[in-house]
Length: 221
Image (cartoon, rainbow, N blue to C red; front, side):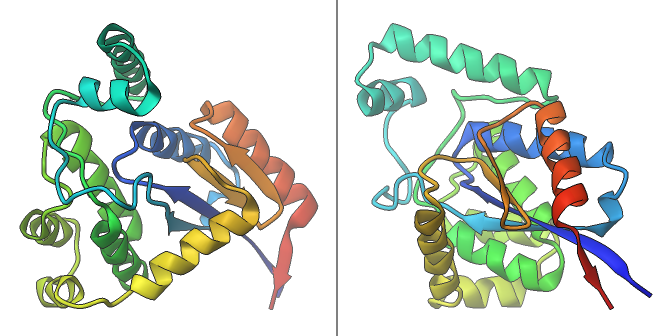
């Protein structure tokens, strides 16, 4: 019996608000996709700032202003836009509470979650922790607690944080992103053929899924 399947790889970071919006839009699109049960979703690592400290000092608007060379007023308007777009996707983005920082260890735990079958749940928990709950996403104590809440065994998550396990896998994701020319996230790659950049509306993502299914479906025994 031939069974058709499709893989969607998503490069994103847990301190990227557009990645949170993109995740929700993708989930909306997937829920409307006729063959959603045959889609394998893999979350790939992408660090917006590999040199970031465990927790970044200062408020979010000031960071945006420095990063993009804009005024605080312009940064404030950007935050308003992101907050509004998040609300349209059903998300509560609270940038006043956000405590972003280095995400390398979060990505290592997301790789563990992929092997334990809870990758989507851990990714979701880390994003909500950053943009809704105001958790310090670069702190090991917070990461361990959040990972366990999302379904990872505590001893396994702690072991990862105490070692360099999955470091090579995170770096491999980042090298692959470079090979694909991915410089901004979120970025969706469908069957290594169709690329969808940015937090596109659900209709756009759904269209990509349907085109990929029709053109690049892989029959498996």
